[in-house]
Length: 164
Image 1: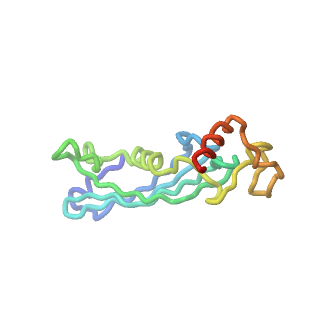
Image 2: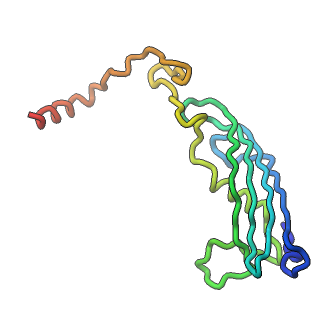
Image 3: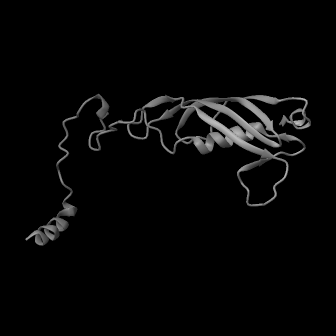
């Protein structure tokens, strides 16, 4: 828990934080990894804001070729903090309890929500050959990719009739 009493009573301008997550085991495609977050919480005339950076250091599996690679894309952290909500539908605020917030939980939630749904070792990853399994990033495999699945032949006849 991160105590915000000094920030709220005006005896401090900001409260700094640092969080280290040693085991990011909540990421499905993860081999292993850690994450570090840092930043500050400030009080702007009653509007309490959290601003920071989250830096993952994850070893993940590429969704196309299966290679393990390092994912280190930084994530911006931002949140509004309050002690009570005027309206129960205001879900953009983090509610503090006893003048404190669970900063570890906030960082973990941000990491889970902001990480991509799948990882690519590079944007133009060619993946694996569907026939022989060769990594196509290392060159063509020579498999004949023009072969058709005979189950689709019925549709070939259907479309050729319309063209006439």
